[in-house]
Image 1 (cartoon, rainbow, N blue to C red):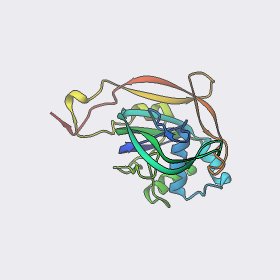
Image 2: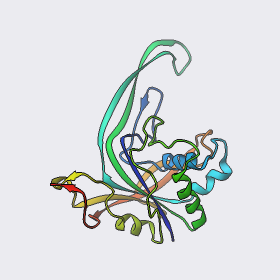
Image 3: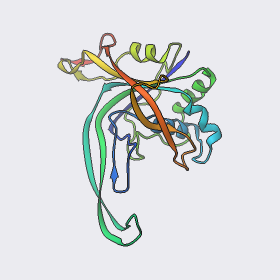
Length: 226
């Protein structure tokens, strides 16, 4: 079954799934809902269009942590914020924005419809709308698409066999193992609430399961500083 590989690298990324009001969180890896949103932006799928979005949500999702990044937090202020019960207005509110700095993830999407993966791959090279890593201001520092983006391998094989996507690392920073998270159909593993159930304008998300394993470092590394 073919798999499409994406490269998510940038100075800042944020993949929140539990953000509420004045707190915007981030997970430790890209969420499926956010990556589907990135694909929708590339394809030009409107927020109200569930018909074209639904096939993307059926793809099996996986992530490899090539560089996990450093957690960070920004504090921002907002004025004239209405309280949740509408009883008062806060003249000034402090909000928090969590993010990952200097992270690099290899994402895989597996599906039976190769033509769909080819359309996505083509759209990533010439997106309809700008691509972002979780928030509009967090833009990729390298192309999301890859030269050989579609491989005729299972999701696990594709994530395991792809060369390391990080460059310009010191030799002592090259890991011996990499973490991968694979979507599971067995109902076992970690529960994640990032499976889109509707168009993005309605913001309905359901549960999915994924399991994580460590894999040996994938092959030799070029362009490593000594």
